[in-house]
Length: 341
Image (cartoon, rainbow, N blue to C red; front, side, top):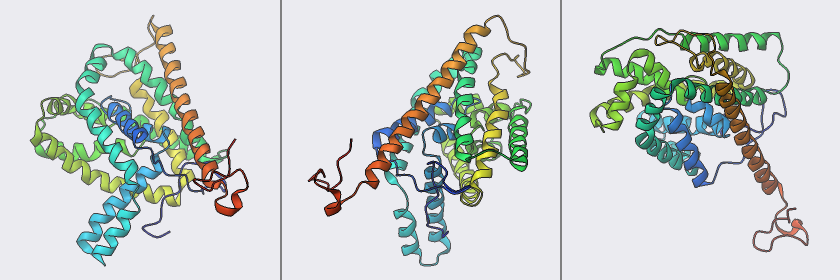
């Protein structure tokens, strides 16, 4: 597979570890809403924007777009064939996905960062119960995309992923001063949440004591803080995107299994009953309400997955319909495609 080849995408597995191409997401409004969802969950400790990308069916395509964007910068700097190389990678990007997605993310972060943080602070158990269900329902997506029953080695990969997710979400809370040289590595690590389902960038910032300062900087439009954070987030994103694309292209099944494990292990951060230090506690008297919210979250995710799978099926039917003289007497005269039931 060459550098400009598209990443395999999220349709059903046909050959173990290999998948046929998925129709590109061409609806700008739908992609704007996907971006807004990612932006909203990125402000919630314990929830990952990568999880939303996975559930809404754009994960592989988003990784591929990120790869080509970073490749543009590299070809510009080191060549060879700078102009032609840049054009090649720019043409490979689905801009109808990327541009609305970025607009939706930015709009959501700038408008709901404060209110969402207020809800999490005011109703921590309720919000964690809801998001626990949302993430738990999302785990079924990488499980399905891994394709087929897991064997002994793959069960070990799942266990390693779960242990990693648990370890990250068990980090003790620190209280670091938001100096430039603390913000830089924190931003580079936290941005992984855009790429790794189950890993929450907000939770990492919370563990480092930088969650409130970062949200405050966004609310107050502190452009210096935002620009510095964004610069190092881009550095981290370049590294992680290239690594994830390599894994998805060459080890897709194993990568999905590990991601499922990471998402399960990371559920620790969303356990509703925790003390101020983040230690887990036994369920309280409000467990029926929180269980109901968790079930509601699971059902909401499954509804999103169902809607996305039907859209994919319709797009596949449209793309496979005969075109031109072979379309038959019932073909649409405007498009030349066969009639659909």
